[in-house]
Amino acid sequence: MNNLPDLKDVVIYVKDNKKNFISAAVIALALFGMFFAISVNFGHSTLDPKEDYKYQFEFIVENKEGNISNNPQTIKYVLDHYILNQNLKTDQLDSHALIENYDITYNNQVGVMTLKTTGERKVNQLFYDIFKNSKSEYFADRSIYLLSTHPEKYDPEAELLLVEQGISLKIILLYIVGTIVTTILVGFLLSWMKDSKSQLIRNRFSLFTDVPVMNLEKLYLQNNDQRQELLRTAVKGMNEGRKLVIAMDPEVLTTLGTSDNFDIINNLLSEDNLNSNYQEVILICRKNNTTKVWYNTQLELLKNLNVTVKCIYF
Image (tube, rainbow, N blue to C red; front, side, top):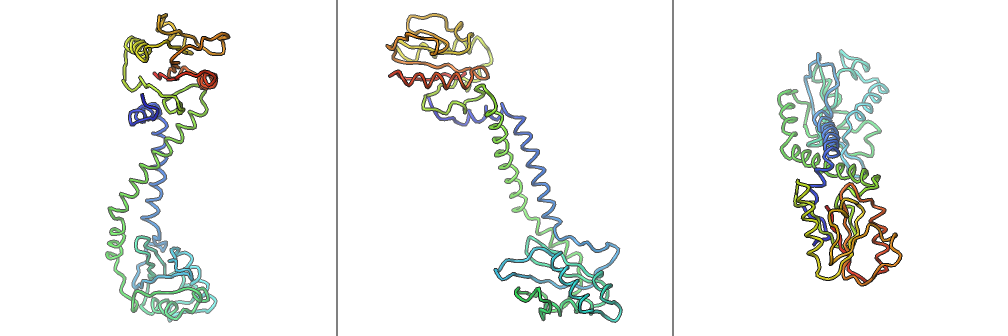
């Protein structure tokens, strides 16, 4: 007789609450599916796909705490304002056209930003010089690391390969494990919330007390006659001495009937002159039938008796 739930108790609990765990799985899949999609597409170019990139350079921006900046939109916003305020331009593009012909993407797998431009090399060189010389006030208290020594030819195949490499097996496994763990945690949370609202003892986990519990549910008996016979055997075989059996369910009272070695009642509150010469008291809890109030009341009243208390759960 064990007072701690084991793996079989957990399996039965999950089966009883399978709707909650299915709901939790749907929530986890939706949540981590969204995270995965964001991870894959984060930093995706917002430039008109009809435009062709020509040149690029890669860089890293760190704040004064040493954290890598991962928001390309912020960097682009800073550059746009700097270009417009300084009225920077090239031979063919004025400042307004200039800010429409570049984009910044971020690869969150490697922590690197890429600034890509259309048109001539001098357009990309203009942006490269801004970073190289830290001309914007935004970069005054930040560190800039140029990973390219000069503007380079844009290679779409290399960029695609970098994205594909970023979606590694490790990342996929991480999302799978996260989905499983979230499903388990949310499933147990939903089930616990349902249990807490119920007035009935719905599972073995509701019997977390110091009282030893014999869990007949783990025997997976489908036949009612078998369960009744097992219950009678369990009660009679627990102790050779005189026993008091307390059961809320009238069917249990009928099943056990009368015996020379035990007395049976349905509530201690109804007994005014209870014989205290019992060697053992057996509480019988029936799943989805016995109430929590009844069970806790019996345990509280039994504290007044100097007797061994056990519980049979089925």
